[in-house]
Length: 130
Image (cartoon, rainbow, N blue to C red; front, side, top):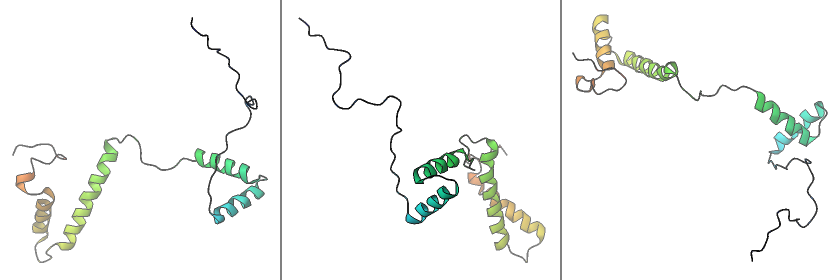
């Protein structure tokens, strides 16, 4: 014969409170930060625990300038453009000043394009048959 297992078995010990107290979270704070929290709490009429709770809530509601989770085409272009600008500035500093401005611009274009052998391999530019 199968033995029945009671569904609502009573547990031992003190009964649990219904809906009662939030769990405790221990936080280590440097002494200087603790003093700042205490000063903020005094100014706002709160003890240390309440001050930390309020400051965390305030910190969670503030919007921060973070990196967007999904990058659109514009966000992907910014690093490329920055790299092009940096390369152009470096080339300008190294340019032969005795050459004519047209010749300097031609050399700069040739350097920024890269060697002919690798132009079709680059993934940042569409393949152009020339």
